[in-house]
Length: 170
Ligand code: RP5
Image 1 (cartoon, rainbow, N blue to C red):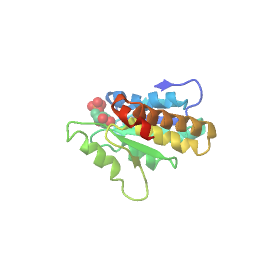
Image 2 (cartoon, rainbow, N blue to C red):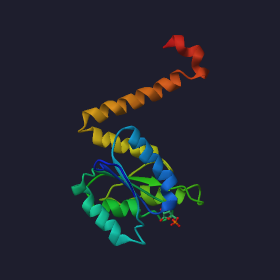
Image 3 (tube, rainbow, N blue to C red):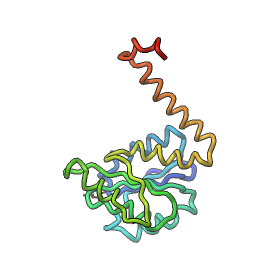
């Protein structure tokens, strides 16, 4: 578990430590936006009771959004969503099956009634941005940091050397 000093607002969970290289991209992005988060490896099928305890206690500890990553028969995000009314964002982990098509379909094809917002295969950065956007609905300072992130991203493209001849057309 990686825990920041202040209470986590985003709970990040994945099915295995082998998912950490993908999920740590979300941790890094949230840290840049000054959003406290925590990262856990809790398999939904190997440790369901621990997963239920984690999800059940999370809201009282300050968590407002979950990011859940899993690969293969990726039921973890759906199981998390089944146990909470907080928003859940699913991250399909790349696998040997079509680059992670199995994970993508497992997460995106949630039957009606229990939604999981699904990002691209390996798309942990977008999961972090979406989580931050949800939190920013009630956090103007975070909204400002998200806008600054967007502006910097746009500037880096406008300032790219390949676009030098287009600068006068701004
Ligand atoms: C899933 O199975 C995990 O999310 C991981 O992506 C995949 C492989 O898990 P390990 O064999 O690395 O534990 O549950």
